[in-house]
Image (cartoon, rainbow, N blue to C red; front, side, top):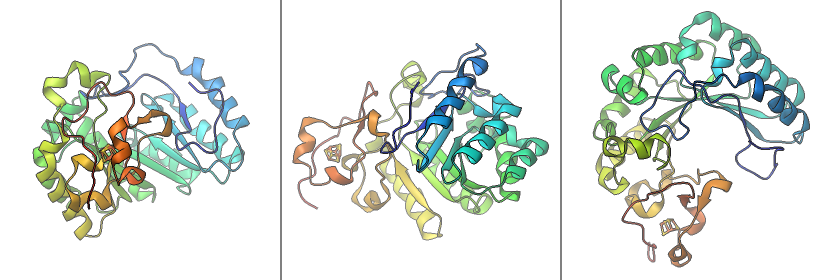
Amino acid sequence: MRDSFDIHSNDNALFTTAMCSNRCLMCCQPPSEKNDIDALWGKNLKLVDTAPKELPSIGITGGEPTLLGKRFFELIRHIRSTLPDTEIHILSNGRAFADKEFTRQLGEIGPEKILLGIPLHSDNQVDHDLIAGARGAYTETLIGLYNLARWSFDIELRVVLTKLNYQRLPKIAHFIYRNLPFVRYISLMGLEYIGYTIKNANRVWIDPVEMATPLCTATLFLDAVGLNVSIFNLSHCVLPKKVWPFAKKSISDWKSRFEPFCEQCILKEDCCGLFATSRRNSAYLKPIKIL
Ligand code: SF4
């Protein structure tokens, strides 16, 4: 955990708890059973109090930050009053927002400068619950998304790309268009080979190059229907050229690295690079020398 925030960093986040109500098969930060909320609370308030006033963005992450209960709202209110110009980016599995009363409490704080990043693993309950490792997760997450939309919150829908869902990406894209067109952003996210992804590698890992066709179809469809789609955590050299415009420099600055051969790559400036923490990468990395 950080001792202070850096205004030049693209990753200033409050780690609120390691506990989680999901058990995602590819979780990069396997959850803990130990209640650590009290232990982290004071440190997080201090981080907010000592943050530069011009901090552009602050993350609230875990684990599952809504497990803080009332303190979840207290923390957001504290950021609002201390750093009124800072955007708040909450990463949550969205399940707690199935409770209208819980969502109302966030709604009363107001949707301004709040973005909620919420994962959708599939267009169907069986696959979503399997990947989330929690029965009922799909239904609660979807109800949560609708409840948040009623309060006009900005939502970033996150689809983590795994062996279990990549073939359905075009179906997931249609599902989003038909049922969740109100989301502000859709992020299609490459895996970090760490945590439960290592443990469940045979079930979740696939070389990104092998998912090129469904990934392109889904990305281009979402763009064509006017939704704001991006590809995160996948370097340009593992993606077909037609989706390069959607690939973002998404890996936190302290977590990214490049191979020596990247120096010969003409797209290095635009590329997200590789997770420094990943124990495995695509077998197809290579410098791009001509466009
Ligand atoms: S060679 Fe390196 S810089 Fe170029 S696209 Fe691949 S990972 Fe990115």
